[in-house]
Length: 207
Ligand code: GAR
Picture (cartoon, rainbow, N blue to C red):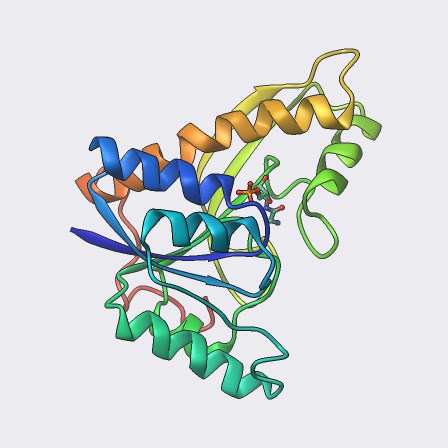
């Protein structure tokens, strides 16, 4: 079984969709941990309700960035995490966690990267920018995580139409609905070997 450790900052609906896919057997994996940087996040409430170990680690619990990085890595190792899933996590990861889990950290982003990614491009900002740009399609990207925002190698994408009279909220809801099935499907392809993640040797230490 692939042990999944989540990082999430807000609602945690993507985390929930993955947990649900595990419960019904669509995803052959075990959710073993949630770390949130936000002590008031819905994700923490969901993990508690699901009986999944959880904790809050952030700049208040660990003001020193190196110690924060080490704390995240230590908890992931303690729970024997195989793959880290960023499910709406709005912080960068530190070099120790990135290097230990090279090629084993995935993020979901609500656009067709490399379009509409990078600093400040999260949540509703992404969908507002997509509509303002006159795009006719948007979508979901799942990519490996590196030290920057949204720049790691893309491993899977799914397209979603942008409709003529879409509001950012309407587009966000359509994309999020796709995220909820696509993330678990992509993880299952990793489990079955249909999608191969880089081995530690192949992975760049900065990835
Ligand atoms: C999702 O739409 C995810 O793609 C996005 O945050 C939302 C989290 O929702 N992530 C980013 O924008 C990362 N750059 P959730 O908390 O309900 O899963």
